[in-house]
Structure formats: structure tokens, C-alpha cells
Length: 513
Image 1 (cartoon, rainbow, N blue to C red):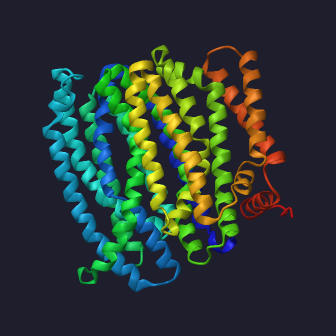
Image 2 (image 1 turned 90 degrees about the vertical axis):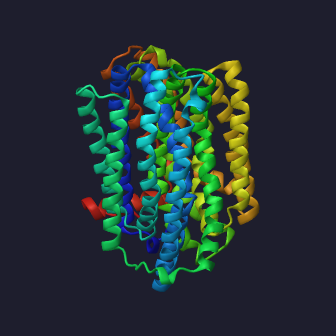
Image 3 (image 1 turned 135 degrees about the vertical axis):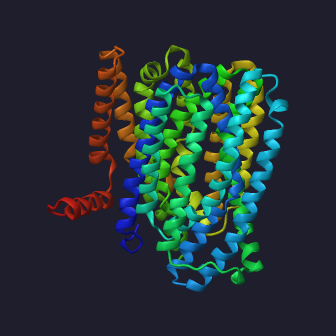
């Protein structure tokens, strides 16, 4: 990226985002075994099942948060204050309607819980399920409205407050949840706590947006043309978000309906771990769309688009492959120590999903580029194909292979659609040279991943013992080997120069040209 498009706010925002993700990881590491021990496998499965069901309502944001980011970042780059005011005044009205629609759908779900889960949940579990859904409905309604303010913050590139608030939210959730568990709280009480934390998070975010971001909401500025334009863009973003929810949460729902809560808990553990991989790379890619929207305002040259995609993709791919290699080598021991021997299948589920997601994660900046150019309609159809294949194959594979069948179905769909399909689409739409793209993204990084994987396999042979100290030591050594290898064989001249500039800026020393 050129210096023109990079600011300290972006650098610090990425770092804070990684810290927030690390805190969420820590919360998962601490809370999941605590919840399993306190609730038991069945109630934990119920807690995750209901959370998965109701959180699907978050897609009723309908993509307007991403749409807000795209338009605000572009108008802000062009210094068009009038268009910012018109757009946000229009979107504000849309979000009021979305929040009301979410509440109506939530009430319908609440009134049909018995019919949905009568075959898989006991009478006592159904009572708890209805209590949790009742609480979550109001939390999700506020979250829907709050997504507008998240989109505004991202569009104005106010990353420091946004990510700092996430850090506070993560720490609050961790410590207050542990306090409730220590006091013997059940799954309903924990659901209420998460809802209260969510409410405070979105209220403080809204207050900051009104105070620090330069815009005015006036209902007289509402424009039907803007509403139609934004809705057309948001519709395809919504479809992509719906498919993303379907990819992994459909597995939990299908397992909950076709099997039992204990099997659902195994898949939930796997998805929790996989989401860590996704979250760390998403922490980097959150800054791509605003930059892509500004980039799209200036050029459509295929070679320049390819170069723009390669830069953030290399960072995302390096982080992702480090986590995948680390988990392949240390994951079985980690799952055993974290969750117990009953959850061994979770290790294989994560390995299948994480390997199948390598190319889709590397191509995530390409999706942001497609959104920035408003060229994501066909892309939506490709991603929808992934969701349909996952559901279809999961229904078959669950009967044949149990919980591993869902992972296999998802992996096959990701490779067919999100890897091959998306690659073909961006080649045709943006005149991208796929050989140049993949060579640019994976050049050198594959060496670091291969060397680290081989080192990890040999390390497992040498240190074949299950203990926390051995696990930490192996993880630390694999990270060291990866970082050393990628520095000498993975980074290109531009990346080494940027590292040298950052080192000079924040720690002093010479800039290596």
C-alpha cells in the first residue's frame, strides 16, 4: 500500500485489533473448559445451540454495516460532507426498520421453540432454551442497530476507539463470566450477562460516533435514490454474510436436530477454535475495505488491482498459515488438555476446515476489492453455491460419518466454490493474472510454512508428552522457526523495507534500504 493510504490510526488499529482477538482467544481458552466443567457437556451444548440459533438474526443487518463503511470511506476520501449526511440520514431510517423486523422474527422463533427442538431437547432444556432466546432477542435487536455505528467508525477509520472498546468488552466478558460461574450461575444467567455487556458496548460506541465523527442526521435529507442504491449494494453483501453464517453454524443446527447436544458440543468446540484462526486474519482485513474503496475511486487497472490484493493477502496468509501449522503440530494435545478426551474429534474437524480455508482466507482482500468496485453480484452467487453444497452434503454425511461428516462437507464446498470459483471470477472481472497473484501471495511464505511443519512433526516425535510446559515450548519453538524462516526466505524487499521503517519510527535505529 502506498504511504498516502496508510496512517498511524491504521497501524495502531490493526495492533489493537490483534490484541482484542488475543483477548477473545484467552477468554475462549479459559471459559470453555470452565463452562464444560460447570455446566456439563449437555447444558454447554444447549448454550451453544441456542446462541447459534439466535445469533443468526445478526444477518438481518442485511449488509448495511459494510455498505456504510464503503460509502462513508469513499465520500470522506472525496471530502463530500453533504453526501455523508444524506447517506447516513437515509441509512438511519433503514436501520430503524431493520431493528423492528429483527424483533418480529425473534418473537416468531421464541413462539416456535417447542416445535423446532421437541425431538432433541428435554422438557427442562426447552424451558431454559426459551429463557435464553427471550434475552438474546433484545440483545440482537440492539446489536443490529449498533452495526450502523460500527460501519460509521470503520468508514471514518476510527480504529483506535473501535478496537479499544472491543478490548474492554472482551475483558469484561471474561472476568464477569468467571465471577458468575464461581457463584454457580446457570446458562440463562450467563446469557443475561453477555446481553448486558453488549448493550453497554453499543451505547458507548453510539455516543462516541455522535461526538467524534463529522456528520449530521436530518430526516429531511432522506433520499429514496440513496436508499435504493445502498439497498442494492447491501443486498449482495447480505447474501454473502448469510452464506458465511450458513457455512459453519448450519453444521451446529443440523447436528442439534439430527443427533444430540453432546455431538453438537464437539462441533461447537471445533468451530470455536477455527473462529480463532478466522478472527486473527479478520483483524487484519478489517482495514482493507476502507482502503479498497479509496483505491477504487482512482483506478481500475488490472495490474494495479492485483498488486493491491497481494499486499494485504501476504500478511493475512502468513498469519493464517502460522496458526494452521501450529495447530496441526500441537492441536491434538491442546484439545485433549483443554476439553478432555471426549472431544478428540474436534481436532480433526479443525484441521479439515483450516486447510480447506487457506485459499479463501488469502483471497479475502479480493472480495473487498469486488465490493469497493460494486462488482460483487456474481461473487454472491458463487458463495451461495458454497452454502447450498454444505447443507446438502452435511445432511448426507452426518448420517454416514457423524460429526466429521459436517466438516468434510464444508471443506469440499470451500475448495470448489470459495477457492476455485472465486479465483475464476476475479480473473474474469478484474483481468487479474492468477499466476502472478498466487505467486505474489504465497512466494516465500510456503517455504516458512513447510519448514515449520516439518520441524513441528520432528518436535512431536522428540517431545511425545502431554503437559502444559511441553505444549507451550513446542508452540514457542514453532513460532520462532516460522518467523526466522519467513524473514530470510519469505519477505520481499518492500516488506523488509517497511519493517525497517516501522522499527526506525517506533524504536529508533537505521532504515535498511
